[in-house]
Length: 265
Image (spheres, one colour):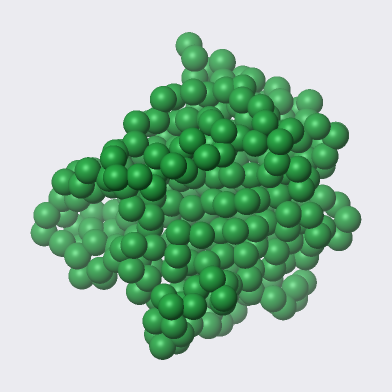
């Protein structure tokens, strides 16, 4: 397996033509479209030709700042595409991107897709977000993940329940998406699609309201971590989103309800 670095000239070009040149990850029945150098972020997750995602991206707020900024505002240093299962599918299935200043503070994001067989409706996306502080001073920040899944093409009939480090989103008769995050976020918010996105993009500091749902309709979820990264230290957030056809709803709902119960005790 030989990773293929994206040339720095191309990385610079993304800053001016990001919308016209997104990157595509693919594996078996799944494709993931990403614009790593703009707040568009992850713009689609197609499983057997059906798009299940409107938008997913990251925001952060440093301790000294009064508002959030999208991850790409730190500056994309480099990006690397990799194929981890050439024998089964020769297309690139993994993206690693670096943001910030490699000598002071930077964030490394690794996204990978794992598709099921054609027609299975099964897929998963994994993410590792690593924070590195090679400087001589501690860094304190709040980190946010915003996710707007629209399962099964439709946007208005999804239901979200947030548990302790889990999110369960269902679309009646179509798909179930279960997301697991470690470490569990400090705060969360389930809301209609425009509410949280508006607050992330305005001039103030967002305060997530810990609404864990259930919420129904064209809904989104957002997670928040408050991180204190010591000088010379690193931290990591891991996330996996697993999509299955709707008949798996009952077992996944049981898992989601158990997590929700633990969260509320």
